Image (cartoon, rainbow, N blue to C red; front, side, top):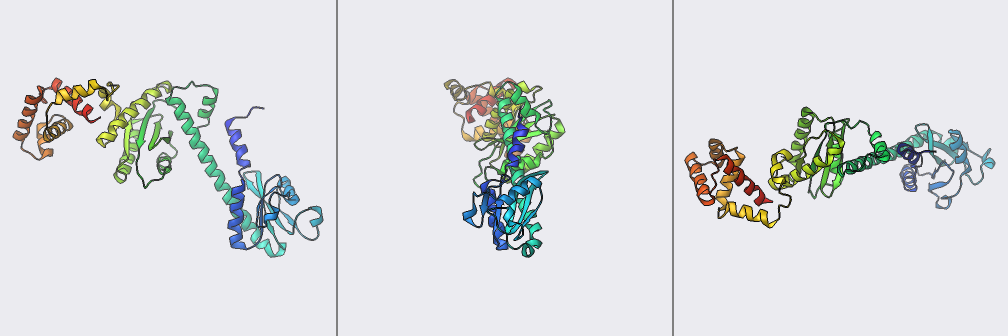
Length: 374
C-alpha cells in the first residue's frame, strides 16, 4: 500500500491526542469543573486523568465510544458491562468524521449531564487548535524543504514533485527570490514568518525561515504590481524594524534557474546590510563579479583609486553618485553651493586622476567606493 505525504499527515492528525495535550485538557477542565476528567485514546488507553492511578489503564467504555462514535453513560445499571470503569459520561472527541479520542467525566450522570456537552465542545476546540497548529507547522516545513531543494539545484525527482504538488498553488514562472534579514533582539524567531504568512495570505508565494536572522520569499507568477505591493509592505515594516534589510534577486523563467535568483538575492542582501536600504541585484550586479571582495587585489584597487581622499571628499563623492551625477541636486542635498561642490569634485580629480563628472572615470570611482565598504 503506497502512502503519500498527505496520508502520513492526516494519519498523524488522527493520533494528535498526545499525552501532553491530554494532560492540558484535564488540567484546564478540572480547574473549572472540580470534577475528575479522563482523556482517553481511541484504543481505550487513559492518557491523562485527575486520578493518576488510572493513567495507562484500559477504559472499556471508551472503546465502545470510539467504535460507535456516540456518547456512553455509565451508571449502576450497566457498569458491570464495562470492567475497570466508574459511573460517568464518556463522549467522543471528533475531528471531521474521525474519533481522535474520548473525554470522560466521572460522577452521577444526572449531576453532570448539563455540563457534558460544554466539556465535549471545549475539548474538541483544544484538539482542533492543536491539529491546526500541527498542520501549519507541517506546511511551513514543507515550504522550507521545497525552497532549500530548489535553490540548491536538487533534481525534480518524484518525492520533490509530490511535495510541490501538495502546495495550495502551482509554481508558475516567472520566479523571484527576496531575502530578508532581521537582527532584532526583541523579536522572537517566529515573528517574521508569521508576518510573512499574514502578508501573503492566499497569494502564490512561498516564505519562511532560511537561516540565522534570515528569511526567504519566493514569488511565483511574479508581476510588477504584485512585487510593488510586497515591497510597499516590507518598507512599511522596515520603518518599525530598522535592522530589517532586504535583498532582491533577479527574475528567472524556470525552476532550474532559482539558484541564480537565490545567489543574486544573497549578494544583494550583503549590500543591503551595508547600505541600509532595499537592494536589487541588478543594481549591484557589476560588483558581484568580484567573487572575492576580500582579496588583496580588490583592496589594492580601491586603495589605489581613492588614494588619500579624506572623509568629507568620500562623502561628497558618494552623494554625487547617489544623485546620479546631478550637480544641482547633490549641492542641495549636501547643503552647499554648487561652486563648492564643483571645487570638491575637481579636488577629487586632482587626488585620484579620475574625473567624477566623466562617465568612464565615474564608473571606476563608483566601484572603488562600493568595494571599499565591503
